[in-house]
Length: 193
Image 1 (cartoon, rainbow, N blue to C red):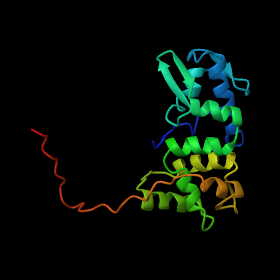
Image 2: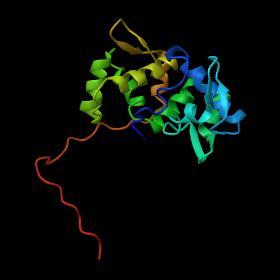
Image 3: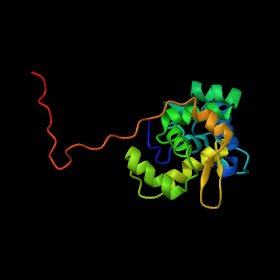
Image 4: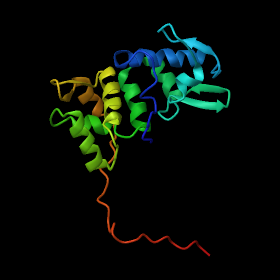
């Protein structure tokens, strides 16, 4: 899995409210152009963009694969989601390829939390040291678009019923173990003879 620094969480037209439909339009554009990265497509916002620029960040999240320098293809996982359009399917793809997706849902099981608190829990439990809350905000934007998370009040997020049901289907990563002996230099093992 990846941090997905920008991995699929940005660069889709339409903003948070339209992330899922924009993603579907991009994946359909890949199919309709044969994956030609130089093909210009409009995914519904009136702006022509190259397939390559629309899909650049979708490889890290398991939705697109590079066939060669000039062509990309929709992954079998993404093809299945395109047919079903079940938000749980897209959640499962993201969870398999991006760190802190299902785990973020799990952080919201006990109580609503704010972005800053989630950011701190990501650092404390999972050793995800992000300089800003942007990575959390991107994940929340997708989880809201998928119907898994909603606003609790002006400062906190909570799970929806769909989010609770979907979480039961995911295998979560374990919190990072406490680092041992950090004040001692590590030893590199000798290569086998």
